[in-house]
Image (cartoon, rainbow, N blue to C red; front, side, top):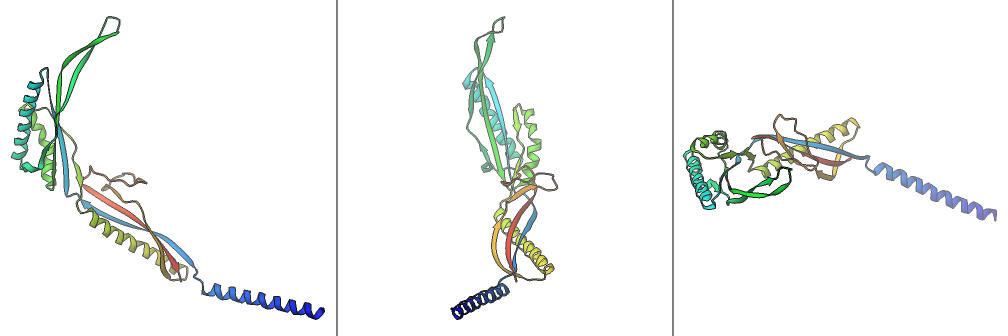
Length: 243
Protein backbone atom coordinates (compact mmCIF):
# COMPACT_ATOMS: atom_id res chain seq x y z
CA UNK A 1 0.00 0.00 0.00
CA UNK A 2 2.83 2.34 0.88
CA UNK A 3 4.58 1.45 -2.36
CA UNK A 4 1.48 2.38 -4.33
CA UNK A 5 1.29 5.76 -2.54
CA UNK A 6 4.89 6.51 -3.39
CA UNK A 7 4.29 5.61 -7.00
CA UNK A 8 1.29 7.99 -7.18
CA UNK A 9 3.25 10.82 -5.55
CA UNK A 10 6.14 10.27 -7.95
CA UNK A 11 3.77 10.38 -10.91
CA UNK A 12 2.21 13.64 -9.76
CA UNK A 13 5.66 15.15 -9.25
CA UNK A 14 6.68 14.19 -12.79
CA UNK A 15 3.50 15.77 -14.22
CA UNK A 16 3.98 19.00 -12.23
CA UNK A 17 7.60 19.20 -13.31
CA UNK A 18 6.58 18.81 -16.93
CA UNK A 19 3.97 21.57 -16.58
CA UNK A 20 6.45 23.94 -14.94
CA UNK A 21 9.12 23.30 -17.56
CA UNK A 22 6.57 23.71 -20.34
CA UNK A 23 5.37 27.06 -19.01
CA UNK A 24 8.95 28.24 -18.58
CA UNK A 25 9.73 27.37 -22.21
CA UNK A 26 6.53 29.04 -23.35
CA UNK A 27 7.40 32.22 -21.42
CA UNK A 28 10.83 32.33 -23.04
CA UNK A 29 9.39 31.99 -26.56
CA UNK A 30 6.45 34.38 -26.13
CA UNK A 31 6.67 38.04 -27.24
CA UNK A 32 7.43 40.54 -24.53
CA UNK A 33 4.21 42.48 -25.21
CA UNK A 34 2.77 45.14 -27.51
CA UNK A 35 3.21 48.86 -28.12
CA UNK A 36 0.34 51.12 -29.10
CA UNK A 37 1.28 54.45 -30.65
CA UNK A 38 -0.49 57.32 -32.41
CA UNK A 39 1.06 59.10 -35.36
CA UNK A 40 0.12 62.49 -36.79
CA UNK A 41 -0.02 63.55 -40.42
CA UNK A 42 -0.39 67.28 -41.06
CA UNK A 43 -0.38 69.37 -44.25
CA UNK A 44 -0.91 73.03 -45.11
CA UNK A 45 -2.54 73.77 -48.46
CA UNK A 46 -4.29 76.50 -50.42
CA UNK A 47 -7.79 75.99 -51.81
CA UNK A 48 -8.03 75.63 -55.60
CA UNK A 49 -11.83 75.95 -55.95
CA UNK A 50 -14.12 78.78 -54.86
CA UNK A 51 -17.91 78.82 -54.63
CA UNK A 52 -19.49 82.23 -54.25
CA UNK A 53 -23.15 83.20 -54.28
CA UNK A 54 -25.37 86.21 -53.85
CA UNK A 55 -29.04 87.11 -54.06
CA UNK A 56 -31.19 89.95 -55.35
CA UNK A 57 -34.84 90.86 -54.92
CA UNK A 58 -37.70 93.04 -56.10
CA UNK A 59 -41.06 93.91 -54.58
CA UNK A 60 -44.19 95.16 -56.34
CA UNK A 61 -47.94 95.06 -55.92
CA UNK A 62 -48.17 93.64 -59.42
CA UNK A 63 -46.54 90.22 -59.90
CA UNK A 64 -45.87 90.75 -63.60
CA UNK A 65 -44.13 94.08 -62.97
CA UNK A 66 -42.08 92.59 -60.14
CA UNK A 67 -40.89 89.76 -62.37
CA UNK A 68 -40.07 92.12 -65.26
CA UNK A 69 -37.88 94.24 -62.97
CA UNK A 70 -36.19 91.17 -61.51
CA UNK A 71 -35.52 89.90 -65.04
CA UNK A 72 -33.73 93.16 -65.89
CA UNK A 73 -31.66 92.87 -62.69
CA UNK A 74 -30.67 89.34 -63.64
CA UNK A 75 -29.36 90.48 -67.03
CA UNK A 76 -27.53 93.39 -65.40
CA UNK A 77 -25.82 90.99 -63.00
CA UNK A 78 -24.94 88.57 -65.80
CA UNK A 79 -23.39 91.32 -67.92
CA UNK A 80 -21.48 92.67 -64.91
CA UNK A 81 -19.96 89.29 -64.04
CA UNK A 82 -19.01 88.55 -67.64
CA UNK A 83 -17.38 91.99 -67.90
CA UNK A 84 -15.23 91.00 -64.91
CA UNK A 85 -13.92 87.95 -66.74
CA UNK A 86 -16.26 85.24 -65.45
CA UNK A 87 -17.26 82.68 -68.05
CA UNK A 88 -20.98 82.58 -68.84
CA UNK A 89 -21.15 78.82 -68.18
CA UNK A 90 -19.92 79.38 -64.62
CA UNK A 91 -22.82 81.71 -63.81
CA UNK A 92 -25.80 79.75 -62.49
CA UNK A 93 -29.07 81.42 -61.53
CA UNK A 94 -31.59 79.70 -59.31
CA UNK A 95 -35.34 79.62 -59.87
CA UNK A 96 -37.32 82.65 -58.68
CA UNK A 97 -38.82 82.47 -55.21
CA UNK A 98 -42.17 84.30 -54.84
CA UNK A 99 -43.65 85.44 -51.53
CA UNK A 100 -46.93 87.23 -50.87
CA UNK A 101 -46.45 89.90 -48.23
CA UNK A 102 -49.09 91.00 -45.74
CA UNK A 103 -49.19 93.62 -43.00
CA UNK A 104 -51.20 92.93 -39.86
CA UNK A 105 -53.82 95.48 -38.80
CA UNK A 106 -54.79 96.21 -35.17
CA UNK A 107 -57.55 98.17 -33.45
CA UNK A 108 -56.99 100.82 -30.82
CA UNK A 109 -56.90 98.14 -28.09
CA UNK A 110 -54.12 96.25 -29.78
CA UNK A 111 -56.30 93.44 -31.04
CA UNK A 112 -55.49 92.07 -34.48
CA UNK A 113 -58.32 92.81 -36.88
CA UNK A 114 -56.88 91.35 -40.06
CA UNK A 115 -54.11 91.89 -42.61
CA UNK A 116 -53.60 93.83 -45.82
CA UNK A 117 -51.77 92.57 -48.89
CA UNK A 118 -48.66 94.72 -49.47
CA UNK A 119 -47.23 93.12 -52.59
CA UNK A 120 -45.09 90.34 -54.01
CA UNK A 121 -41.44 89.86 -53.06
CA UNK A 122 -39.43 88.02 -55.69
CA UNK A 123 -35.98 86.69 -54.80
CA UNK A 124 -33.37 84.97 -56.95
CA UNK A 125 -29.81 83.83 -56.27
CA UNK A 126 -26.73 83.43 -58.43
CA UNK A 127 -23.80 81.10 -57.82
CA UNK A 128 -20.28 81.04 -59.25
CA UNK A 129 -18.05 77.98 -59.05
CA UNK A 130 -14.56 78.46 -60.40
CA UNK A 131 -10.92 77.46 -60.14
CA UNK A 132 -9.91 81.13 -60.51
CA UNK A 133 -9.96 81.63 -56.78
CA UNK A 134 -8.25 85.02 -56.54
CA UNK A 135 -10.36 86.55 -59.33
CA UNK A 136 -13.70 85.46 -57.86
CA UNK A 137 -12.59 86.47 -54.39
CA UNK A 138 -11.89 90.01 -55.62
CA UNK A 139 -15.19 90.23 -57.48
CA UNK A 140 -17.09 89.15 -54.36
CA UNK A 141 -15.63 92.17 -52.55
CA UNK A 142 -16.46 94.66 -55.29
CA UNK A 143 -19.88 93.36 -56.31
CA UNK A 144 -21.55 96.17 -54.37
CA UNK A 145 -20.81 98.21 -57.50
CA UNK A 146 -24.09 96.74 -58.75
CA UNK A 147 -25.92 99.03 -56.34
CA UNK A 148 -24.91 101.92 -58.58
CA UNK A 149 -26.87 100.15 -61.33
CA UNK A 150 -29.95 100.07 -59.16
CA UNK A 151 -29.69 96.38 -58.27
CA UNK A 152 -30.39 95.36 -54.66
CA UNK A 153 -27.70 92.67 -54.43
CA UNK A 154 -26.60 90.78 -51.31
CA UNK A 155 -23.24 89.01 -51.44
CA UNK A 156 -22.52 85.89 -49.39
CA UNK A 157 -19.12 84.96 -48.02
CA UNK A 158 -17.16 82.77 -50.47
CA UNK A 159 -16.54 79.13 -49.65
CA UNK A 160 -13.22 77.46 -50.46
CA UNK A 161 -12.55 73.84 -51.40
CA UNK A 162 -9.68 71.63 -52.57
CA UNK A 163 -10.13 69.33 -55.55
CA UNK A 164 -7.13 67.10 -54.75
CA UNK A 165 -8.25 66.17 -51.26
CA UNK A 166 -8.14 62.41 -51.89
CA UNK A 167 -4.47 62.54 -52.93
CA UNK A 168 -3.65 64.80 -50.00
CA UNK A 169 -5.28 62.37 -47.59
CA UNK A 170 -3.15 59.48 -48.89
CA UNK A 171 0.02 61.53 -48.34
CA UNK A 172 -1.06 62.40 -44.82
CA UNK A 173 -1.84 58.78 -43.93
CA UNK A 174 1.67 57.80 -45.07
CA UNK A 175 3.18 60.61 -42.99
CA UNK A 176 1.13 59.65 -39.91
CA UNK A 177 2.19 56.00 -40.31
CA UNK A 178 5.87 56.93 -40.48
CA UNK A 179 5.45 59.14 -37.42
CA UNK A 180 3.76 56.34 -35.46
CA UNK A 181 6.45 53.80 -36.42
CA UNK A 182 9.22 56.20 -35.32
CA UNK A 183 7.49 56.60 -31.96
CA UNK A 184 7.19 52.82 -31.59
CA UNK A 185 10.90 52.36 -32.34
CA UNK A 186 11.86 54.89 -29.70
CA UNK A 187 9.64 53.28 -27.07
CA UNK A 188 10.94 49.79 -27.87
CA UNK A 189 14.53 51.00 -27.82
CA UNK A 190 14.08 52.57 -24.38
CA UNK A 191 12.55 49.31 -23.16
CA UNK A 192 15.43 47.25 -24.54
CA UNK A 193 13.40 45.58 -27.26
CA UNK A 194 12.70 45.78 -30.98
CA UNK A 195 9.55 46.62 -32.92
CA UNK A 196 7.95 43.46 -34.25
CA UNK A 197 4.98 42.78 -36.49
CA UNK A 198 2.08 45.18 -36.88
CA UNK A 199 -0.97 43.65 -35.20
CA UNK A 200 -3.59 46.37 -35.53
CA UNK A 201 -4.12 49.71 -37.28
CA UNK A 202 -6.93 52.25 -37.19
CA UNK A 203 -7.39 55.72 -38.65
CA UNK A 204 -8.52 58.68 -36.61
CA UNK A 205 -10.74 61.59 -37.61
CA UNK A 206 -9.82 63.72 -40.63
CA UNK A 207 -9.80 67.43 -39.78
CA UNK A 208 -9.54 70.55 -41.96
CA UNK A 209 -9.15 73.89 -40.19
CA UNK A 210 -8.03 77.39 -41.09
CA UNK A 211 -4.27 77.90 -40.99
CA UNK A 212 -2.87 79.49 -37.82
CA UNK A 213 -6.28 79.55 -36.16
CA UNK A 214 -7.55 78.52 -32.74
CA UNK A 215 -10.32 76.53 -34.37
CA UNK A 216 -11.34 73.54 -32.27
CA UNK A 217 -11.16 69.99 -33.52
CA UNK A 218 -14.37 67.97 -33.59
CA UNK A 219 -14.87 64.33 -32.64
CA UNK A 220 -16.86 63.88 -35.83
CA UNK A 221 -14.31 65.71 -37.97
CA UNK A 222 -14.34 69.33 -39.10
CA UNK A 223 -14.16 70.84 -42.57
CA UNK A 224 -13.55 74.58 -42.70
CA UNK A 225 -14.88 76.06 -45.96
CA UNK A 226 -14.47 79.76 -45.19
CA UNK A 227 -10.66 79.97 -45.17
CA UNK A 228 -8.63 79.89 -48.38
CA UNK A 229 -5.51 78.72 -46.58
CA UNK A 230 -6.19 75.53 -44.64
CA UNK A 231 -4.47 72.89 -42.52
CA UNK A 232 -5.44 69.24 -42.77
CA UNK A 233 -4.62 66.75 -40.00
CA UNK A 234 -5.18 63.04 -39.48
CA UNK A 235 -4.09 60.52 -36.85
CA UNK A 236 -3.18 56.85 -37.22
CA UNK A 237 -3.22 54.42 -34.29
CA UNK A 238 -0.88 51.43 -34.68
CA UNK A 239 -0.20 48.44 -32.46
CA UNK A 240 3.09 46.51 -32.77
CA UNK A 241 4.47 43.39 -31.15
CA UNK A 242 7.70 43.84 -29.20
CA UNK A 243 10.51 41.34 -29.83
